[in-house]
Length: 356
Image (cartoon, rainbow, N blue to C red; front, side, top):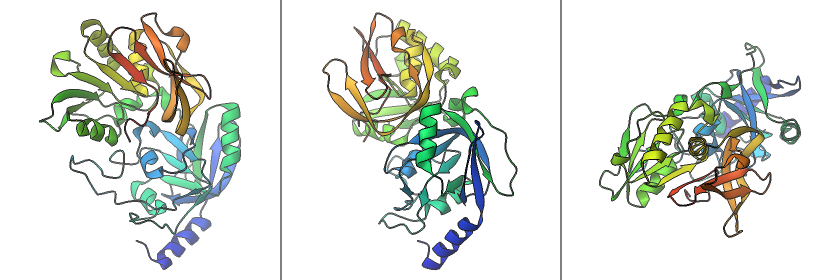
C-alpha cells in the first residue's frame, strides 16, 4: 500500500498535469491526467455500474475504447493483487491478463483507497500498464451528450503530448487482437468436453464451466470447429463489429448445418451465431453497458437484471422462422437473445448472472 506521503505526491502531480477529452463533434471536456501521461484516441462509451472497475478495465470487450464510468467516485477500493492467480492459472481478481480499455474517464479519482484486498491505487495500476486516465470531468454532462447524440469518437489529449487523430476501432478486427493465439485446455479430466471460442473471453466464464465439471478447450477466434472434438460449443463475448469476424461466422454456419450438438453464445458470441443463422446486425446508438440492464424472457415474461457490454445488436426483424426471440431489453427493446425452435442452439446478448 502507498504511504500517505506517496498518495499526496500522486495527487499533487495529477492536479498539475492538465488533459482534455476531445470529441469528434468539436466539444471538449478539460480535466487532469492520472495514470500514464500519454494521449489516446478511440470510441467513447459509458458504463453505468457502481462498482467493478478492475473487471471492466480488463474486459477485452473494451478494447480500443475510452471508457467513461458514470459513478462519481472511482478508485475508492483500490486495485487488488494483479499477480495473484487461481487454481487454473488464471488471474484471481481480473477478467484477463491486462487492461484492454485504451483510456479511462472519471468524475473524481480516489488516491486513498480503503479495502482489505487493495494493493495499489487506480493511478498506479493505470501507470504501470501505460493507460491514461482523466479526472475532473463532468461525466453526467458527457454521458447525456453520448445518449442524445449517439456514440462518438474521442481522444484524451495530455497537455504537452502529441495530439492523436481520431480513430474508429470498429473498422478493424478487434477480436483478432484480443483472442489467444494457441489452444489451451483447462480441467482435462472433466466429464463434458466444452470448446470455448475466445473472441475476447472473460476468465470467470472458464471458471464457471470448470466448476460444473467441464473440460474446457479454449481456442482462437478463427479455430477450425470440428463437432467431433466437443460435446458443446461456447462462443464468448468480445469487442467490436461482429461482421468483422467472417472466419468465425463461416465456421459456425458449417457447424449449424452439420451438427445438432449444443451451441451457446453470449454477447458477441450471440451476435456471431445469429449472423451465421441468417440474422443481420446493426450498430446501436450508444450501446448497452452496465450491471443493471433489464431483460424480459419471452417465454415467461419474467424480467432479469443483467450485466451487459455491447455496442452492436441483432436486428429482431431479421430472425429466421426456425428461430425465436429469447430475451428483449426493456430499456430500448433491442434483442438480447434468440433460441432455435427445435435444436439446442441458443445465445444471450447479456449475462444473466450465469457467470457470477
